[in-house]
Amino acid sequence: MSRLVNPAPPYEISKKKAVARLAEAQQRLLRLRLTLGGQLNTPIGPPLTCVFEGWDASGKGGAIKRLVTPLDPRFVRVSQFAAPTYDEKRHHFLWRFWPKLPGWGGMAVFDRSWYGRVLVERVEGFATKEQWSRAYNEIVEFERTLVAEGMIIVKFWMHVSPEEQLRRFEERSNDPLKQWKLTDEDWRNRQKRETYEIAINEMLERTDPTWAPWHVIAGDDKHYARFAVVEKVCEAIEARLKTEDLPD
Image (cartoon, rainbow, N blue to C red; front, side, top):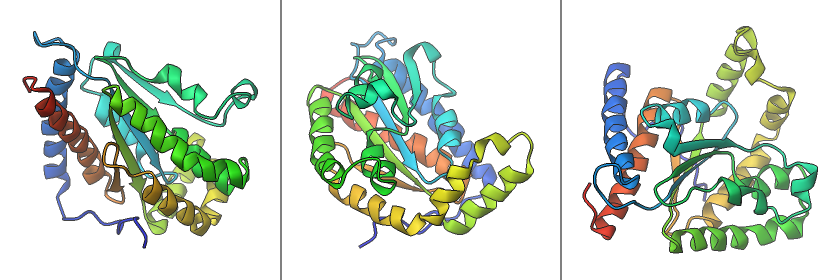
């Protein structure tokens, strides 16, 4: 059964209310981050890693921007991952992600991640079937290790319907200031959407443990998606703070 949600948000909300809800969530997140960073006369808190995957033009960049905007840039790092370099290919596929992970009191946001092994590398044939089949368990154990050491991991799949994706592609194509966002690879990936959906659903099914669950965000309404992401991060931090018995 498909894990991908209907592209419509679970409820309707006006742009004005969505913007207000985002602002409220950002202030909530700011206080929580200061708490984790030990900047409110509290003990230093656990590291936080937010992982973003999603369709091309699904709103990952916009959601990430709203997530980090209210935060002190000295205590949050955004890392974007493309195809591995020649040197990175000489190592295990998880190797290149370790240096970007945050320490205690820190926060990292990953724009694409280790899930490339079971998505683009699988679909495009950059990894053998044996490699990507083995990767599900490797990823789950990798995340288990990080969580066991105290890390909060919040994972997002940004979902967008094929109709809305096409509209956004065409908008980018016609806007000189956005054309750089649209590549030939984006169009090729769109032609393989059904194949990608199979890979995505298997990823969501096999890498969704209770300690690092997936949040599938309905991205057709970008205003809803943005506050939904920030709220989910806040909820994950608050849940952890309760178990740590730290002030929120």
